[in-house]
Length: 390
Image (cartoon, rainbow, N blue to C red; front, side):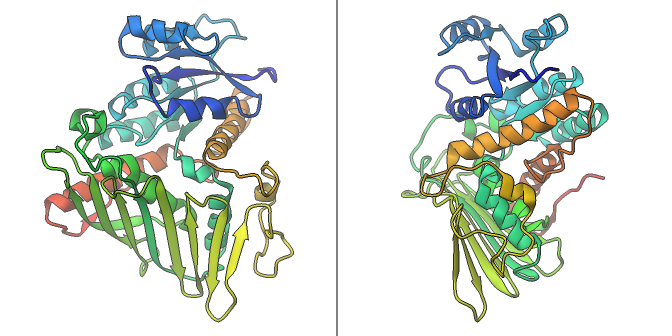
């Protein structure tokens, strides 16, 4: 493949969908990727109408099956280099499986599938076909999230004792008829699957630890709602002595997109919040407080910040004083995924190891966590093991 911009096909994203908008901005962010095609809606007629009305010319397809099939005969310059899946949860597995089976890399919104059986099948085919797969856990794309990961995993806080990872919103505080509260389209959990998986992923990515057991409560605060809108899981961590609270709420009025993590180690504490995305606060026992801002005061010469990774320091960012936030995080995921897609197309090695973005196994872990939490909640909070892949 030449160095032309990568061609990206959208699956979903029509009829006023929100999440496709930051994704398409991210795709075009660097000038090295572009949206060229789309199967934008389940109804074939509407799908074509949506494509025809797209803000710029794209090739519209009646279905994702038709779009994937068309790649067999498409000219090299028009072939899709990856697809982006931005559908409700119950339409993640089928297009992802078919695209991977056709050798097309996939970037998919979370959670990875509707259930664990689908997640396991997707892991199997991704690893058999050796095709790049990214799960869109957006907040791993923040530069400060990656900086936090270095601080914690390099041992600067010592052994991790406690983590509080939370995601609080208020948009479901009143009755609303949305697909996220329907078990047929969302799975076993609304709040946990929608945003609790983000809190879990932030915990796993920043600390390098896994959740081994949970005691959970999935609660319905708005009467008549079939799935949870408030989610709490007390967790045992894989380092043996560590504990964590993974919590999420969509009925907490006043909270908008409040994802945050506090990591407490034997030497100190780190705090990061998505609504203050350029700031990392570090408190070491007996030392002055440290507040780091992206591109301001973060240098390899700091006596505390030892051996900052070269690729972290080389990551493109805008000058300090210019806010880097939500859209930049999306762009960083697509940029990192692009590097692996280009390597795959050139027949070169690529990792998809979870260091730059969530991978297919991270997706399975998220589903296993939600499933274990639902089981625990049904058993009145009984300690429940989180299944692991071999």
